[in-house]
Amino acid sequence: MIVAPQQLADLSVGNRKSTPAVYTGVEPQKRTSAAPRTLARGSPGLAGTLLAMKAIVVTRLGGPEVLAVRDVPEPVIGAGQVGVRVLAGGLNFADIMTAQGGYPGTPPPPFVAGREFAGIEETTARRVMGYTQWSAFAQKTAARPELLWPVPENWSYEQAAAFPVNYFTAYFAYWEAGFLDEPSDRRRRRVLIHAVAGGVGTAAVQIGHILGAEIYGTSSSEDKLARTRELGLQHGINYKLHDYEQAINDLTGGEGVDAVFEMLGGEHTAKSIRCLRDFGKIVQYGTATGKQPHLDLRALYAKAAMVQGLWLTYLSGKRELMNQAWQQLSAWVREGRLNPVVGQVLGAERAGEAYQLLLERKNFGKVVLTIP
Ligand SMILES: NC(=O)c1ccc[n+]([C@@H]2O[C@H](COP(=O)([O-])OP(=O)(O)OC[C@H]3O[C@@H](n4cnc5c(N)ncnc54)[C@H](OP(=O)(O)O)[C@@H]3O)[C@@H](O)[C@H]2O)c1
Image (cartoon, rainbow, N blue to C red; front, side):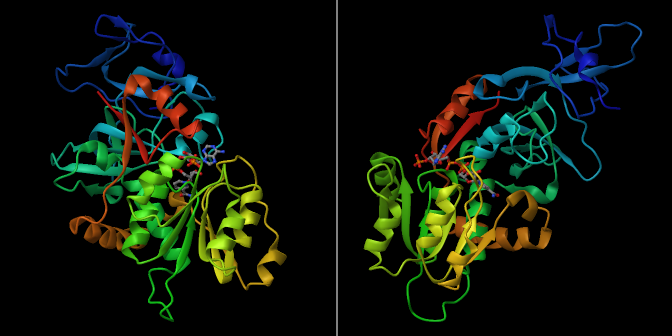
């Protein structure tokens, strides 16, 4: 049974009136015991009560102002799923696009926001971090066990919530760019990372450092570049002050880079192609400008260059690939070589502010929300 929004309109949490019509798509759970948090049905004729929880809800499509902490029914844990008590959620640029209605597969609002989380697996009490498409920013989420990973012992939940999207995406970017293969010559490979001080960017710097890459990165801020240099960035380019295409040309003696991790779209895709050296590759994994990537295939001829797409939503369905990635990532974690960069931690009630930080480019690394 799916609860329609209008069915939730008259529910209350304890003595407090719940907010109306905030939730779609998740079946409510029948109360089986005297649970402390319940949504009691208003009409005496309706059987059962619903377990209630707090969640950050996208109440309608729009900017940060559409986010609200609401009381919603707990998800029912279906076959092939496990329940996780969520304690922290990692904010992604994709969450902003999702709230705006610009992310493929987004359900109609109202729905629970968030695509990555850390917390406690209900059946085992294991500390876990996980990935989903939405519904992560709630006290409880229904998770797919193959997309849950154990939290390293010395990590906080905030750090763990900053891991899945950034590190799997950055890992697959290097994998697609061929940096995980043995080089055919002794030349040091060069990568240009856009938004190098952001979530995926800082993860890509840490992995690039492990792989021995020469790392070039763009950012709008000297302060963010300085902090990213401490992670292993060698060549920071402030794009507010310098044209990065010219800077790459100067810094590489006109040769260019082997790979660009491109998440801006619009003219930046074409510009990034011009930053490539022979046989180089653009890994296109986002369009933060909101613009279609400009792609002149003829520009690829001259350098025998390539463009390849990367979408974690799609790759996360490939179990073997994900397991291989985790094997390598978890080995680096055990060696202490990967440490999620958490720039800001905010309470759930400040979710709008957190989204605003990313929109205004004020984040460093990951913005994490704590879930009560
Ligand atoms: N394909 C996938 O599977 C996948 C997975 C994860 C992320 N992504 C994409 O990767 C990109 C980064 O995601 P993230 O979550 O790690 O975010 P983020 O990099 O932590 O934050 C966004 C950063 O992008 C930079 N930026 C440049 N142009 C911007 C613009 N027009 N509007 C806003 N920010 C702009 C800003 O840094 P500076 O001011 O330093 O430039 C900003 O801080 C996004 O485009 C996202 O959609 C894709």
